[in-house]
Amino acid sequence: MRQVLELASGLSLRGFSMAQNQDIAYVETALKGLTNEKRILVSTLKQKYSLATNGNFHLTTANALDEHQLESAIQHFHKDQPVAHFNEGLFPYLTASEIALGRTKYQKLFSHNLAGFDHTGFFFKGKLQSCLRSTHSCSRCDCRTYGRQLS
Image (cartoon, rainbow, N blue to C red; front, side, top):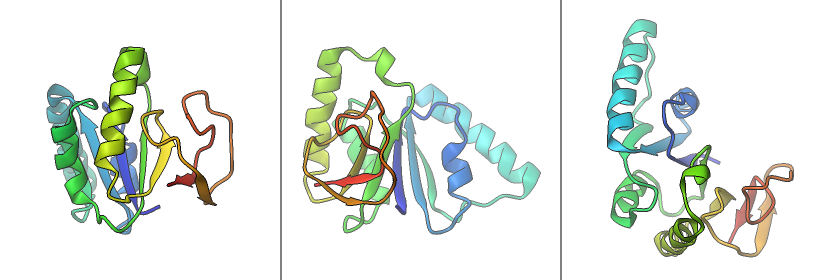
């Protein structure tokens, strides 16, 4: 997987770390206050340790339930390539109706045939294809797998 969308990334440095690999495009979304703090943190780390992201790491202000903000975030991706989607720690803050609303919005956003990896519960409940990683039981996944491409 060469393209990753992380929702509600908070102050995690996972995306910044993964983007050290030039072949990975990584887009993180978070609310405005956290995104601003993280930009300062990433800038400090880049200067202090002479790190680069080669234009493949993007911090984007986006509410996970705001379709227009998410449309802006995914503009960094190639539409003909699959995108891995995930979050860690978002769901405890959402109601069941917000999760259902999010799923509807994501299905619309990714209806133009961007493949997805469902590790969030927001994405498609579709036919599993092309196993790219091992299976595991994760209570957050609708598909009950991680690393399986969905159609």
